[in-house]
Length: 496
Ligand code: LRH
Image (cartoon, rainbow, N blue to C red):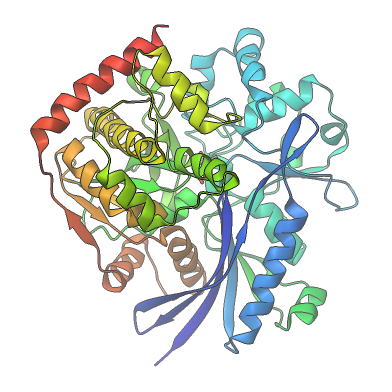
């Protein structure tokens, strides 16, 4: 019996984890070794990621893994998308990476379309949904203000590549994470030199694009010594967390849509080549690169961010809720009291999320929530209805029937929201694994080690490992009525 152990670092925009994945006889076991916060660091007027503190957390993860006394085959890192670090000509990190929630790109994005390349052309070249924080607009903002970091940088590394670099000293540009940047041409899957030029950079800042499952280097000797590990290979997995998550869907055929549910709700379908046309442009759906050349035709929906930000406020006021308390409060609260559009710009990074929700309700003539339970309920009702709206768009683009929705990621543990989603969309919802990003990360390492040969084989192993739960639609009539009310509200807000 051959046993292989893999170490996955899985970093989201609010927290990160060290996961030990063990593959034994075609079955996967997952063990969480450490969990650490990842907070926006506000310095003056800007928000950054504290990459040095993340590096410390990775080291703690390595030291904890060493105590497991197992032979680790390799290490892989996946993170959230679009953000990046600059490296100087001496190989050192040049300051802190900006965080995508920093509002400075709002204006830069609009100016870019007016003065540099029109919005539709950017979309047609890249197939990536226009979001003000995409790497292209972040770079343009820096270029416009003649940022010294950009002027003297020799290399640009996207977050997973930057952290891998800190662990092994080698630089690569991994394909899935590069594909979220809005700097790649969707068809050639290489950097678009016009776009790079418009943002003040050139291809020389990037290293060769490598596909997920490629070895980058080995753990630096001093790190190996410090943490008690040996010179373990560092593998470029699907560095974009969403790409890792989607690789871990326990699907047996292609007639499904997925919802990767975490800080963001990423809803989409898997297709074999980019779909870029007037409709996808209007719907602003993205074509992100996945494992084995697959494309994630998906839409970013503001997800648990709404809840996370409310909870942060309540915690300061001395009220904390765990997951089951949150669900039970929402369950007991009156349904369909009021609705919000989770994607309204007001919720992007407000000082106070509860005040932003209140404001949205007042502007749209609704009575705002008055208790924590009502806030939870408003968010969940609105999310489930948003999922229905987006699924409708995806079905109009898919050349296959969407028969079920696979919900993966941390949010898939919210059974109430899963049932509400099934009710809203009218097709079965299948939940799990909740650790999808880490599992996808581990499986790509298994591929690099030659233990699995294809995406479908990975998914078969995952199917044997997880026990998904199915939620069938109920109470469809009231959800239908609620949907029309929700659409009225969000349309009213858009026209204000
Ligand atoms: C989710 C995610 C998403 C990106 C966003 C910046 O963690 O990677 O796919 O759009 O972060």
